[in-house]
Length: 261
Image (tube, rainbow, N blue to C red):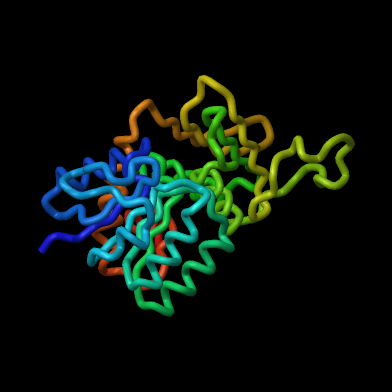
């Protein structure tokens, strides 16, 4: 039996690639799509809805959100309330937001898989950075993207910083509060990790963890290209597994590496 899927942001850069991936995969049946600007248009034989509430009137097993930073939390909580499993591809949510989502998912007995980046190579970047953080006490995160991106940092960088800070809080040669000049230039503190976001024309998505030791440094870098295709396979893997999950799984690494992630 096919997994019935609804996609929000179905006509966006990543959402359209994910929607096309669903239509190509016999494991899934596209039963709903949300895109306010394209409401009423046809996609894969169904009509695009303006709101998630309209789309979920059709029985749905998994809701995939690539709608963007603004509506994502509201979408996810609404889907959970309807008893629908969720894959969160949109960025812009904090650890506190995910705490709220985890509590709601546990209460309703549904699965939520939330990832800052569903690319397999980006997940490997994070996995390797977390290994390095166990051995190197000083590190920071750099985040690059196009000028118009609405959320800072990217979901990839935020999730990376939150997980790095759980490994250990990086040491500073000089405390941030003891510096002279605007301390904002040292980046934002996310779970004890300094994160620097650059937004300029000419960039796609790039995220790196930088580790420093006396006389040497290590960079673990992920760079995305022009296509959204790298995010499709990981998103579809998460959609297949969401129906068997109860509660929140944070990050594709939780699926690929389990407890070793």
